[in-house]
View 1 (cartoon, rainbow, N blue to C red):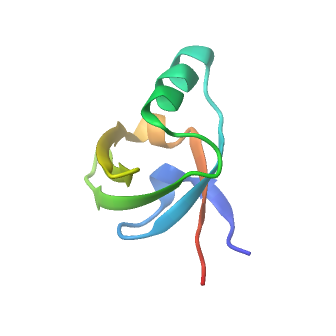
View 2: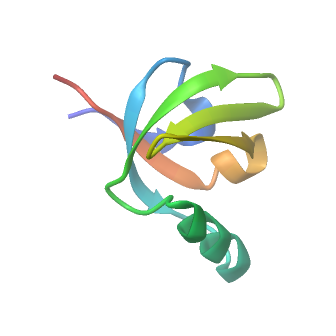
Length: 78
């Protein structure tokens, strides 16, 4: 089983599953409205030094490293 780690630490090109979100109410509501919920799958398209570009449900999103560090993910294997 792959380890659980913050989204900000995952390398480009990986398909990952959201395990949990450790954020306050405001950020949690914002992420949920974009579709970032537990057991959702996303792909890291690009890792710029200050932000991540991820694809979720066919849409691309730019997330700052601070926001991405609150999303706990696990790499999909197999």
